[in-house]
Image (cartoon, rainbow, N blue to C red; front, side):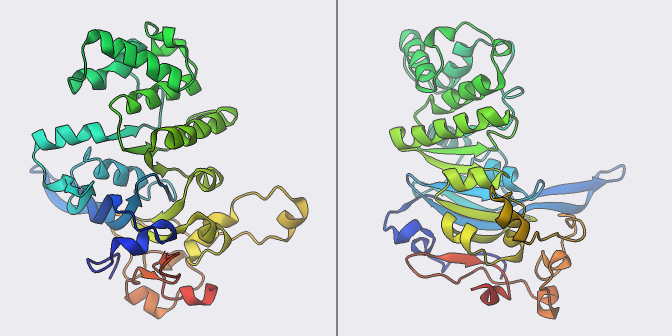
Length: 348
């Protein structure tokens, strides 16, 4: 068993045992990209970018999704929003199955879910003014008239900390941090309930990153937003997230409350990731043991048998090479700590 089965109820995934119904449910989500060769372009394999991912996100929560580059984080975010058609699995938003909807039904649901893209330089159309960029979702979804849209755009600019009179300027007139704020304003235009933030700070200067993260956190409190925050900066993920999911080679290997993940990681891969975070204490940093992973990340087109992490794991045994670990709860019912590792008990 690779991930969560159908009997694994949402209550076990919710933060602090909350009885709230999840806003987002992801069940056994898969996204494979075909590999084609030859003159006839026959499929000879598939890149298993996302392979059986399952989790819930409660309303008002931020779930951080972390992992190495190429592990499938961004693909998972796009598949959840149906920007990529999933190969298999189901995604529910407010109890409605997005994967079963027709295109016209899905179009209506897109008002409720939006995305903040990674690169603020390529995600904004250079030929459009800021007003048109932010107002485009309103026009597409036929929200309001021209006057009310202009007013809404100015409100959104003010909300993200920009001058509302910048509506007639173009993206090249703004810095990277300001462009990302424009991207945030565009995502907020239709009053969404759920936002996927796909590494929204990775392309920004370090001095600007904290400002954007603080903006997202303030907007979450002010507007009651729910985030899937995708990143590889583990320090920033701990700051903004309520729970953290760790992804490796297309699968989630550990998921729990942020403090449980950072203070007592139960998966060897999570331990290796956290050991790379610098500690601002020279004495602790000197005593701390850095975990160096050997070898390269296996190809998602030909993943290893058994546990996908076993070729790089110092604790791997024969069972790791043969059997896929169950994604199980080693925490409590009120504070679940999900982990996919045969030997996780030794770290309790």
